[in-house]
Image (cartoon, rainbow, N blue to C red; front, side, top):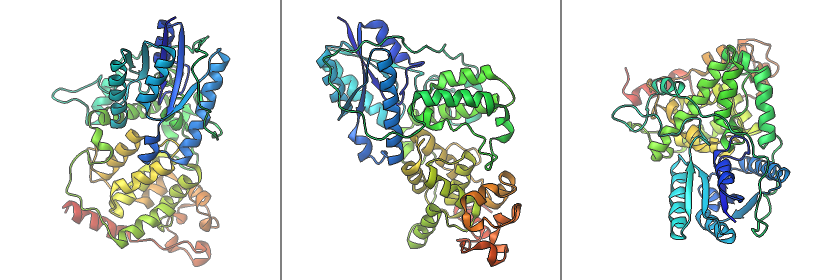
Length: 448
């Protein structure tokens, strides 16, 4: 009886799963395994909102396996040790896993490979499970990765993606392998079933206007698929195929955003230290001390006095999600107006975001802060101008900043310090003038 183990990580689905399909093709019985790793919590990445979403994803995965005659085996502990224990219990000769790109994932993969080899077992690592194009597949001359998005996108777009794989009809799991219980909780809308329904609805009803409406904050005209891509309840390969097949004016813009995800992962795979250190070394002397801490607290709590910034931060606290345009704006405000270290903001995002993804989060923060891959590292987003452009009637701001709900529709809500007190209802004054923040930033960067 041939047996294999499939270790699920950021790929919690049955459709288009090369590792699972390869294990089933090469074995009579397969153990679908997920290991709850305490190191994730110790590293500060086990945000409650993501743990709740993870619980829902695992419950959905287990249900899908049971529909096919199988089940999900859950263990808790150091992954290499737990995988080896499961492989020994069922006498599995092979273990299949999706390729890792982060330093954390690469170290886990290395430990697993060494432990299995010591026990006479083999590890199979599969690409294009958590990305559309493998992180190391595209490289420019004289470098191991692309540092600029546009040339990467050009090469990425020319790649022929593999065909998608159907979900298996049957999964046979050895009876003798025990499992811990599934984690308690489970967020609504989590799991592969919800992901596939959301993608189908998005392709029918939202994609067409994405090219022109993606930055409309009030309309919330985005797919909200980011958490599903992060947890792997959706295949990025399948998503790209389906978006391209749907076509229309929004398809190209949406595929470009999917490419950004692969771009950040290939950067982090090549420069794993970029999760905590500047990708491009600068002479930034970020503000520290009581005043900087107070400004950072005002930013976290959505009381900077700039309504667009505060609305986005309050949405994050309430929903565990923020519109991409909002993310760019609040990151620019923290790092270039308040001149606070990007790591402060990145940590706060990872504490609250359902889709909190190390590659996307850290590299996007660095892009905005000017320490990353942005070819214009000194650009500063003006929150008032951005608000007028992307929330012209103030609907988004009034939705999330109830102190300003009585302000009539229009751009006036974005500069409440110019309004009579009866409209502000206790809303704070700006923490600083934008001109002062810009002047400080320019001095710090040596700009004239």
